[in-house]
Image (cartoon, rainbow, N blue to C red):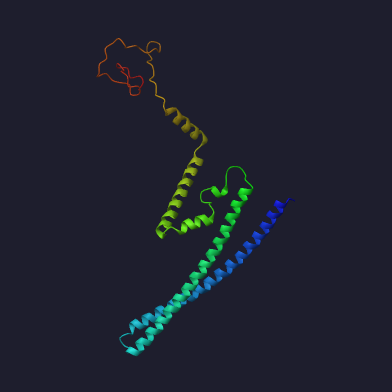
Amino acid sequence: MTRSAIDNLIYIDDYIDTVEALQIDLQKNFTLLKEMDGYAQESNAITAKAAIDLIDNIDEIDANERFIQLKALVSLLEETAQRNSEKAALAKLTSDAVDRHCNRLDADLVKFEETHPIGTLRIASLPGLTPSSRSLREYSKLSSKEKISKKISEKSQSAKKRRVVKDDLNMPRVLKEQARSRTSQDKGKPIKALPSRKNNGKPKSYDSEPIDPNEQLYCYCQQVSFGEMVAC
């Protein structure tokens, strides 16, 4: 076994261990996010109930009691905001961990293609498969509206490509060939008028006769018909 093959096996084993560890970390983070979301929802409900009670009874309590309840409501609001901030921070940490592993995989893929080229096609050069580190930097510079419009545009383009491929696959092969041949024949080739069936299939010659401008014309060749619209 060559040194390169040994290095590849070591890399695969290391990457499998990393993915397994990532799966465990993600499961822990998702479980913790669910618990934190429950605490945040409970804190929101308590804060909303305290605010409604204060508004309903604000005219019946004195100034000191009103100040105490307002202070308690502010504390509840701060606690609710803190719980929501912690939940958002954990969600961002989880997302960053996934992005970091994706960036590593993309970088390793580009490096592998550079050291082991197979043909002229590169996976990293295909649309939508550029390295995540580059795409994430470009994506982070966009505004929220530009991000939404970009996603809508990508979905519409992918749907259009799927429809075109589906229609092309559903079209019978004979119809495809007929359409291609008809298109190639129609381009740059004028349609010839059919000769008259009289005089043993030989067309008449009217070069010596005067031509009336009111005479009817063939609809294809736009020549004088002299009353014989055989080409139509």
